[in-house]
Length: 264
Image (cartoon, rainbow, N blue to C red; front, side):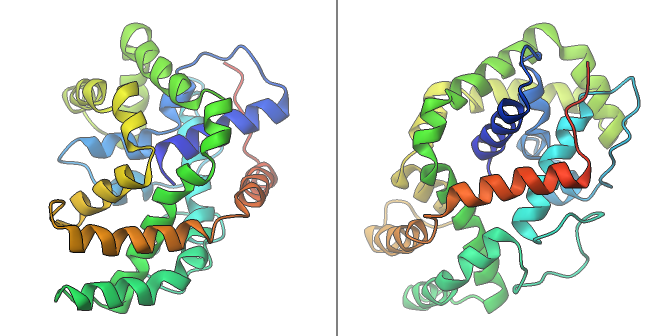
């Protein structure tokens, strides 16, 4: 899932647990596996393949929120919590995003054929799950607005930069082995990337289509391309009417696995 969905899920878990007055920076730790990929030398496989651990050393308690992100993504991608990323890609994965994305696989392949850029079934399956992730934020947009999720995330970024830089750096260094220069580069890039205004601009179908087009090198000035992608995105949106069920089942699965907010 994308950053806002992860943030909202954490808000939900804390709210149900009745936990309050935690430092806002926990919401940044919770998006670290995605945030680090802002750095050109870091990819999502690197950030998601680490072992899922619940026993976090006392020096790095907020790493638990990074683990929460990985547990949620496991459920989205594989339908169960894993020890890491499987070696082989499975287009028939039982993860939420792949199950929901399956009905649009043929639409993606037909579109690619129409624009003379055919792709394999596996690639179409991969893209289908990304579209579901991109659309999910929009499917829960009212919940996100009601919970001030965008502001919560932005305030958390400011808190890390202004108050928690050393702790954040040492935690990421311990967990991922990145050096201070790389981590500080990520934080600098995030200041311009994660502004409230820029986040708001992506919270539309058009904004998500542009993200998708950018990722896969699709010309955004070609109306044929954009119209075809929009049709697929709207098809995906119709598949997510049960979004609250996913949120509830995810929270229950994480709790059953044994994840609890650390006492810091």
